[in-house]
Image (cartoon, rainbow, N blue to C red; front, side, top):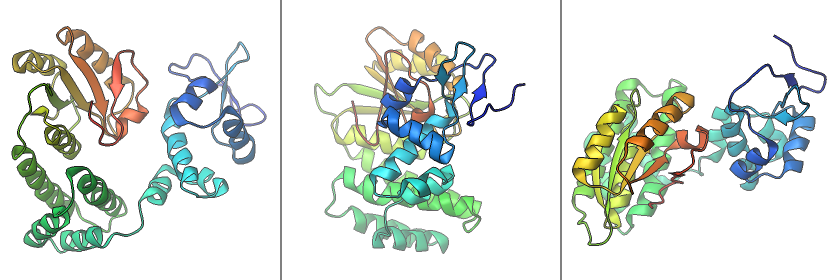
Amino acid sequence: MPGPRPGGEAMAKVEPDLLSIGDICSETGLSADVVRVWERRYGFPVPVRLPSGHRRYRQEDLYRLRLMAEAVAQGHRPSVVARSSEEALKRLLIPAGDPRVDALFEAATAMDTERMRTLLREALGGLDWRPFLQQVVSPLLDRVGMAWADGSLGVHQEHLVSEVLEDFLRELRLGCQPLAGKGAVLLATLPGERHRLGLLMAALAYAATGTRAELLGVDLPVASIAQAARALKVDRVAVGLSVQSAGETSRRLLLDLKERLPAGCRLLIGGQGAARTRRIEGVDRLVGLEVV
């Protein structure tokens, strides 16, 4: 297999899912000039040179470029950002310590579930659902994930946090009443995807705006999701993708699901893996906690 060319470029045989500079710019918000400066100055991204002479970029570089763009937008120096790993970039993007999140993390470390529930109720007091999820739940999950990754938090502690949060979010969702004219959404994940908390957060986001949110669950065959969409008479299906489940396998499953859904039923994808999955015509991405 040919090695890198002078200047860091690699010759491609036939690589699927290569992106043009225009694709990179539209997906990240970066300008073509910035991308090329980063190539020359920092050695990333490494373009692939096609036999035709055109330059292309690998799909797997797209997520890191998005993180880099966000970090620079927050004021971090490009020289630091460009040399940071994906995990380091995620740490850069975690907001400065919030006393509510700090207290919850301490309770999680101590496995004090009653304290966690009390702190969640206190954090929710006076907040609408959106800032509660954005300012408290999401940062807590990021911190727990980082602590689990570096070994400072055990699997048993991480699972306990998930269970407490799942119970709390489910209770909030079930207290919401559907409103006429808001439609219905089915929430699920594809085969092999077992991350449930993102689905629960999305379900709460929908329910809080009056949409009937039907939570089907995780790790489901495409045919079962489509059958449930018909039976429950929903007008939207939202599929959660984690970083681990993103890629071409999920993309093929989404294409299959799109074909199986009843006419007029929209397919949406969300979660961190949505940004790593190549766009599909007619499939919309949910950004953050937006609901459509």
